Image 1: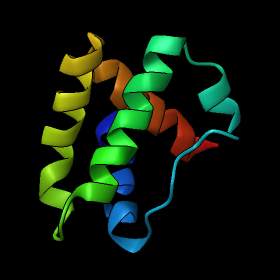
Image 2: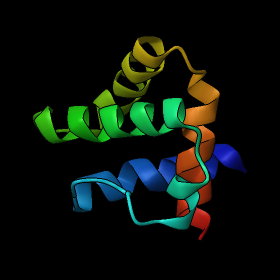
Image 3: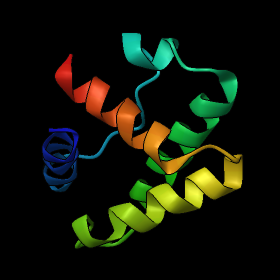
Image 4: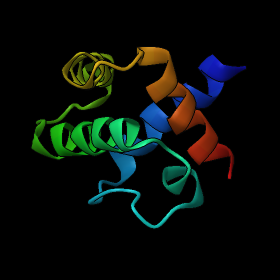
Length: 84
């Protein structure tokens, strides 16, 4: 099921891009390290050229490595964000 939700996130990225989730409830629940990782994901998404869908996995991996957090935690955040 989580994979299905993550696929929905990937599809929505092609539809819209925005500066980030700072005002959302799920974002406010994150640790400072995770907030930085999520911000990095959005920054890299905004810098990426189209087609974006094929680049999401690499973007998340880059942000996870940079901030020393697990890829799964970032994916779980986006899954939770989409559920709300």
